[in-house]
Image (cartoon, rainbow, N blue to C red; front, top):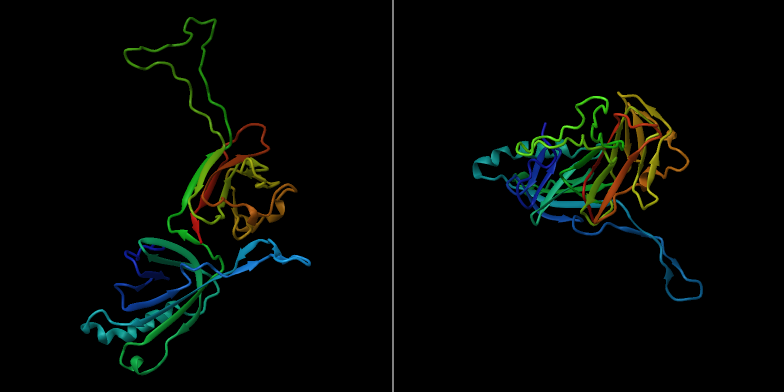
Length: 308
């Protein structure tokens, strides 16, 4: 199974559901519209009463719509006879589907990913069609208007725990501390370092990004926060060592073994969709719990740099 974007190797290429479009393919792209444009915006500003101007409101991006105009042009004269198969392959990946799929585009040396679904397909049956060079028109609609790095980033931490420290030995025994041999550079063993319970997550893009958070037990009342902000997620749930709680902050879902656990959010937990890694910012994500002592629980944060 190929990963999204593996087929894309140069500028002017698009990968959609395992089919390569654009440069070095039979599907010669002409124009891609909407990729570098800002998506349509909802402006929450309201007019000032009996004054010019408006009270500034929040700008919220709508869905992003991409349109691609192209023409089927076999790559060599020997390939002309295969154009019906190329057209059939295009139809097969541009039918009506309810779910979104990865769409990868590379332009100006930059490769980005969006989740999209086909909302229009045009293949006019004109004279060029009968000659084997049909025009093509595709439209994708992306419910999330942000563009992302193809590579996903991830970081994991356990609950905070102190260092083991030095073993001072038994004062009633004659051994005590072993200071080691300076010539052998063995020295003292200060113990294994502890865990801070914190993750450093850098979003290098110019748009806020929504992470996916995985919490593995055993843990009681797990809590995820970004210190210095009001961003906090907390769940009144006890996870066994075999349990993994998955929090998808963009989808706004909290699941355990595929079952909804959104109702376990505590009163001080914010809506999942409000928990973001801010644009052009390195954030500290802290993992805590109500356990009296650190357990073997872990927290993994996954995210992609996001761009408008």
